[in-house]
Image 1 (cartoon, rainbow, N blue to C red):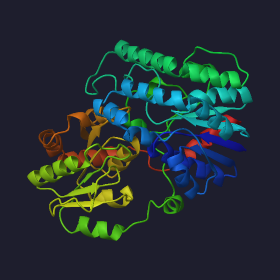
Image 2 (cartoon, rainbow, N blue to C red; image 1 turned 30 degrees about the horizontal axis):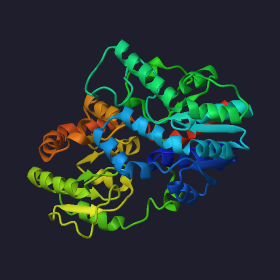
Image 3 (cartoon, helix red, strand yellow; image 1 turned 135 degrees about the horizontal axis):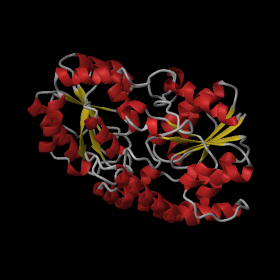
Length: 425
């Protein structure tokens, strides 16, 4: 079967789906991925055919306007910013999604490509499956991510209202471009939201995050929204994309030479003043009497010029599952992939959220008793110390380790592939 998977976004959007693509290809399917230009080489290294699809969102985030939107920590403002970027890229994005899907017998879309993919699948008369990295459909249990303060527990009516507002905003911002696509495909205009279009077509929506992170939600959704757990890469693919490269021996030697360190890293989110953040990490870890393992892959940090204390080690990207079991806690932006790895390793986790779904995950680690949350816009040395200190004890670590045993760590990619094959049948 010919399967097209149009993707766009950051590496956090593409990385887990590569694992799925590899599994589908192992099963004998012809798989073609679409990926933003800055991640085409990453997908190709995994051995998957790939075409460019969508803009370089990382470049957008790194721009002056993107930095201002990220600094505001406002999801709706970022949504408008992405919409403005799409105004310049919309026609090209339409044609790139069509090119990726041109010969498909099945289309697998993601949270950020399903709006276009649903019209392409309709025009081609082929099945569609969508994948969601976080709760992104209206429900009574949780509000739209990033709209309300994550520590709040609003009533069901308020939660539902936030989804109505957000889905209408998305519809208004993107509908003109989507109707241009529909016209090029010979389809009539629509004023429905993408969520409504997928619901009418009864498109399966795979939840590729762990149900343990969102108690109460699985009970509200039917079999159209099954939970697979987080999708990971197999060892062969990880080696091919360089995830296992680098001197892990050097890192392990430092990590194991003394007390377990706290990990600090911020994934795909560009940090405007990385030097200031590093100074903050240096100061707070010294006050708390802990060592700090800092990943420098998330910023413009000049490692050669950085001069933190001896209790701080700065490293590039590394395999989380190799190093995290030797750490004491983790501090990161709350991307679901990094969150899964830190919780799987039993690490109390401080989420310093930037935007989109990250505040949701920050609120959840607090609610579940496995960590704490601090918005990156509010990050100061005093607040970092205040939030991190209570996580550095055996009681919290034991609680997180118990929670880790509830996570789905085996067979998640195979489960997703099974569901996609079932949708095709």
